[in-house]
Image (cartoon, rainbow, N blue to C red):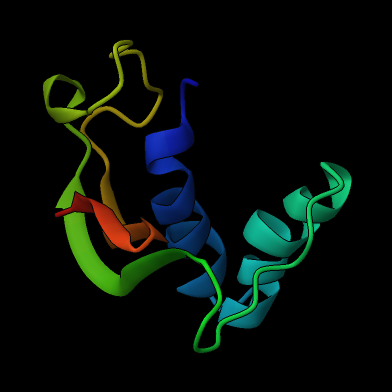
Length: 100
């Protein structure tokens, strides 16, 4: 999906770092609400539950370089922009499936 890799950073840069939205509101918009729309149960963060987490650094600054994106498509309207916020780890089940 084009834009998925930059969606968190763009949201944090344009909404969180400008004071237009809190981190909890962004979590609701990007995680809780999509799960509701898809009819998925909420994720529970507690011992014994399967883990589905994105751990991010809201202050990590980086430049969008299309050739460095993991997506097969390198199209992005954010080419060359400096964004603030980056996924550091993605954990699914008991495995780290992405690490910066």
